[in-house]
Image 1 (tube, rainbow over the protein chains, first blue to last red):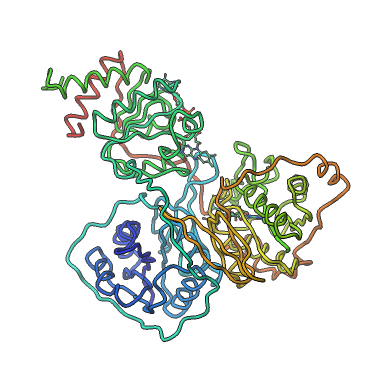
Image 2: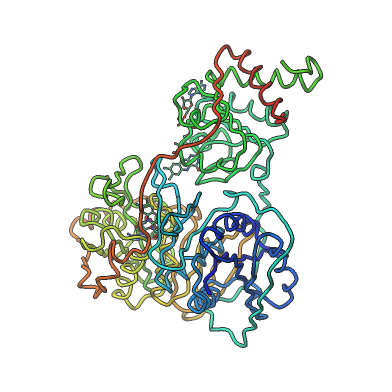
Length: 333
Length: 261
Ligand SMILES: Cc1cc2nc3c(=O)[nH]c(=O)nc-3n(C[C@H](O)[C@H](O)[C@H](O)COP(=O)(O)OP(=O)(O)OC[C@H]3O[C@@H](n4cnc5c(N)ncnc54)[C@H](O)[C@@H]3O)c2cc1C
Ligand SMILES: Cc1cc2nc3c(=O)[nH]c(=O)nc-3n(C[C@H](O)[C@H](O)[C@H](O)COP(=O)(O)OP(=O)(O)OC[C@H]3O[C@@H](n4cnc5c(N)ncnc54)[C@H](O)[C@@H]3O)c2cc1C
């Protein structure tokens, strides 16, 4: 049977975005592992047409467990049902988004079946032995760890926003519907759902991210980032220390403790480039670093490394871009 | 009411060493502290005790010198201290760790609720809570911000999801992980600090817990660290140096060429 499985977390009327990101991962890895890409999802019958959508994004099959009472996530119930499916079909790989749902579910399955589970992977490889090598940052140090699982399926979680979404194409494959006659018992009943004040974070979708670190030296210097962001129709990001210094609120934090961004352009002013920060900018297309220290890690991994005092380069950049936008000297340099 | 709080000893940030041979953490070299997110779980347990009566047991798997951290937990409101310690536990991944914790929790029966932190600050997997629940055959709820008794064995819990919170009824004993920042952990009590000087944690070994040896340590850990490495990046690396005005101008023209601004 086997298969490269992805957990199909459902969010209102479509799969959670991370499912499409995992499909992008699966598209390159599954053929190398000789596996079919399968999205496994649970829900009531009326989701039938909705769940077909992933067949246009690289899923070769959707395994759809159907019961009217699967309309919301229950940790113990979903864990039990998926655990049973894993026992029966023996997939080779099972990936989960590290959302609140995926992080509740994946370890339950791992615990029930005695499986290895690698958390928050930021890259994958396939080795000569055909194993899935799971790569994750680790331990407050600037190091990455390569991890393999001795058990099958090889299970891992991936944070949303780390990988790009799969591109749509011609649909293929089909939905296999498994109608469940009865459900195992659950200790959980949903009583209510209350929306939290909406914190739509513009960072995660921004085309341009202007980020600042401790090298900007003061809140006043840091505040100039907002001017630049506005000029470039971008969003402002930050490192953890400057959030803790109170230069900006924590929603702007990029990295393992904050958000991941995937802009076309990322500019980092006075940021050293600790791994905890840079895992969050892995998806950035062009990285520019501005730092007095040419040896800073972020400078080493930037497309364009600008050596100099960020406190002076930032206003110079704002002036220059404003001139261009206002049409003066519009032909560039 | 018996509340069990799992507290992880973690290396103080900056003092970690990785064993170059096994690629596991060398905990003996590091200075240990209580995992900061676990303090919210401890505070929640102590508040539950104050509301409903009963006792709080602080449970830790760790090396013998972690006993000092359990005394700290006592000063913060725990009533009993239990340390699970054995050389056989070394090198555990989350599955092996949660197995040992589940054996320890079994020894502490009967109990009403097991509370954990959301994640550790070192391994940071957030997996130990739900895995422990699975070993025990109990329900689990992660990222809990409120919990209240309902009926004799039930709980009403509120958990945080992306963009919303969810209220659930939960029957029977369970494992919950506590969302950081949802309460104000109290400072240590002087009276308790003095009292705990006379006390020592109860100590359980693998044998005391009747653990199956193949489920422990490296052999009980299905995840295997192959290698640790410093990340490398392939970018094209243009280096700009000069006066601020100059480099700003150069940067802008590079970005315009690429259609980025
Ligand atoms: C468990 C854990 C989780 C973490 N999570 C995150 C996270 O999510 N996000 C995050 O960002 N961090 C996180 N961190 C912190 C992270 O390890 C780094 O400490 C942090 O990213 C460094 O921030 P920084 O670059 O602003 O500061 P620093 O490392 O102090 O770097 C400042 C840089 O500015 C340069 N500089 C100084 N003066 C100037 C100047 N005038 N002009 C230009 N450059 C200048 C310096 O050369 C230096 O490179 C975490 C740490 C831990 C232990
Ligand atoms: C480089 C490297 C990467 C690793 N990556 C993984 C991985 O991806 N998957 C994996 O399975 N293991 C991994 N490990 C092993 C993992 O870090 C340890 O097993 C760790 O002891 C438990 O996981 P955690 O710190 O992530 O706990 P978390 O699941 O983040 O902790 C959640 C809560 O569980 C409780 N808890 C955890 N440990 C204890 C304890 N010892 N005593 C009492 N309570 C506790 C605490 O309440 C804590 O807040 C890795 C190890 C290395 C060396």
